[in-house]
Amino acid sequence: MEKGSSLVDVLIFTFVIIFIILPLFSFVIEMGIIINKSGIIRDAVDLANISAYNAINCNDLSKNQVIISQSRLDKVYRKILAQNLKLDKSLNPKYDSIACSQVSIEELVIYNSGFPLTCERGVEITRPSIHSCIVVPVKPSLFAGMIMKISGKEHMELKLHVDTEIPKNN
Image (tube, rainbow, N blue to C red; front, top):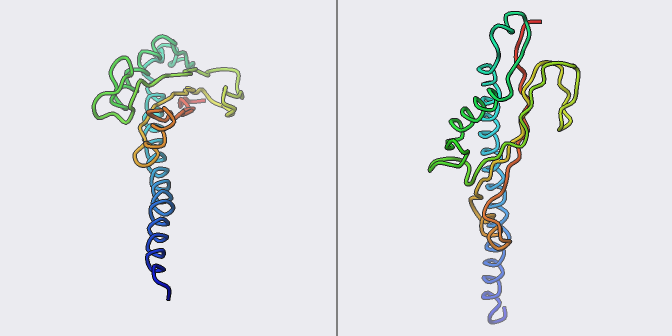
């Protein structure tokens, strides 16, 4: 055995662990964290969509008509979304929020006639529904945070599209 070959073996082993195994492990864990955050946000958005019940005109509902005021829906939706994601009234995150910057609502649409139809994101809708698409900025946890800082970004944006049916008797 040559002198110094064990040193080379140790250096190669260290290189493999630091630059291949740890980043790969970090990537897998980071993806799991992002999928978990996405699920939490999706549930919060779904509950905010269901809050559309609070915006339904009860007199029209008794006639089996789903009529929702867009302005009332916006108000109720923002309130419930803010509570679920721990945001303030302007949709900026509070201390313990999953979001790291202001959440934006890109689309909030009521579908209550003309079925079947397709929403803006290509999903077929066959019943009265609330369609929403929001953008939630989240901070990465591990090596992805360092990579994003190098590229000049502080967070990643999760864009979530949720269509929630409004149950009604037919």
